[in-house]
Length: 375
Image (tube, rainbow, N blue to C red):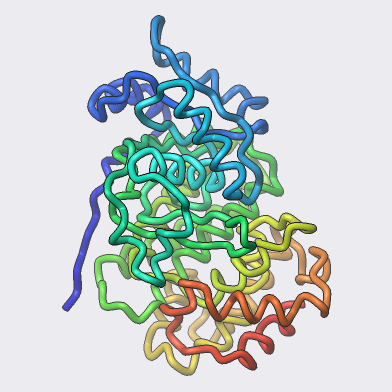
């Protein structure tokens, strides 16, 4: 039996940020906690949000979100949320800020520690409540503004995916204007994150034809407009299309993800490197596509069609060519991954929640082979 769930209210277009005050009122948020990072603040995007409030609204601003959000940062943010008497979260930024904001909302509603909510051991049953979250993405990649999950590196070193319908923001404000200043490199990395979401969600074996359709539509947009968005960041059409690709990617991965994300999470937890999640997805994707093809039935022809490729095209090669075109690294070694890291990557990838929804079950040897192919 298929269970089909789409619950997020999403305001989408240039100027959508103007809908934020009404959504705060609707969610019952009178003193918002803004979870963001220093880059977003330096770009003036916090001002773009607070300028919509008018006068008189109190708020608490936390700009200490790290590139890969950690339990330590979450606890620091939660302490500020509590001390300042906040009653809801505005998660402003890329996936990291939105994930941290969701984690703070979970702690505000249900208490800690975070590890008790591990979905692999039934932790979702312990969630009592979640403080209201309004998500405002400033990148076009993660789609966390409409998703049921968030990812945090715990104090014990695990990069854990938390998932529950309660983590879906009360509203998403998707204003492509907020992405216009995103540098080319970050546009490329976040864009391939969105493309990967669409592909992995479509390949996930869960039966959900509406989500499949959303994934293919998002892929159609992302594959065509990502090079333009990277080349010309002021192209409004490309920015709109990439934000829609991002949103659709997350709407579709209600089905699950796969081995790409399992390995990206494993690599993203390496503290000495602090690697970008979207870049890791782009680098791992070709090897996983080759691994999954024997178990994917008629889905690869449909991917080729959405991507505008020839019927006999090698999709993995096409992804590698796209990565090169938009300036992403050719392999893991260029990102600092060493041979000594591989055993640990295999261990954590195999344990990751995303591995469960890969269309082909991967053994330790399979993960090691895909990692080596991605070096």
